[in-house]
Length: 293
Image 1 (tube, rainbow, N blue to C red):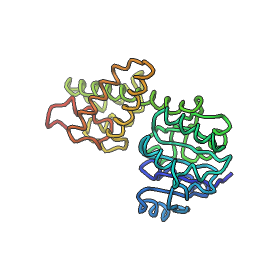
Image 2 (cartoon, helix red, strand yellow):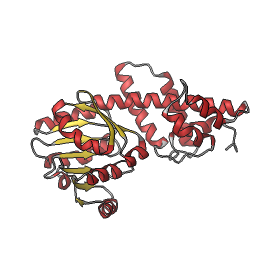
Image 3 (spheres, rainbow, N blue to C red):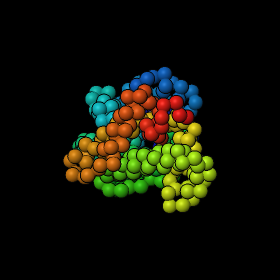
Image 4 (cartoon, rainbow, N blue to C red):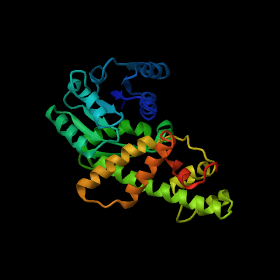
């Protein structure tokens, strides 16, 4: 059933996600800090451009946020122009931002004081997943709030799963990023080893992707890594932000993450080389001599 919804944050992920909501028949109000982006979205989709987060949220049954980091979430959620102050009792706030679990719990408490539901719902699948409506959404919150919001999230997702109470979605996204960091480093090392051994890397990838070493990273980034192409969505700068959240949480809960800590420093080196906007598969550049493809 179509809803009145708001979408706050029209970046590389939020822009197509909001578009899928409009295409699914939901009545969408959008807000973006760069107003020209919201105007462009409105020109491509059926929806209203709001002047503030509060304006977008007014009258919405579900309010979605997808912004940069913890402070960005607070900036659009709180205050006189913030979304939360304009939300009605019984509505649901869904935060798709990859942020800290502490922020998710903070927002859940703030929403509860107003009789508003809350779901922390970071996503995985990158820009291509957002554009294709094939994201994986990992959610934390109350089961009733989740069920009210889930049908709308289905517009841009292939999997929407409640994994636990508020904060659990963010913690699950941290697990996701830990796994990706290790996979990309291992794939980089394997491909560089194969190159130096004189192997046909296309043949190698075709062969091992069908076995136990196969992964999404191998299938979707292996050939672009061997070609030295690193313009495919999720940037090193964003990954370092996410890994910073992971390592801060590990500091609190006592988890020992030696590989993740090391890969975070490798990504720092990629940034220092000017690759902050390269995609995360660019780790392989650190293993190749200067001038290599």
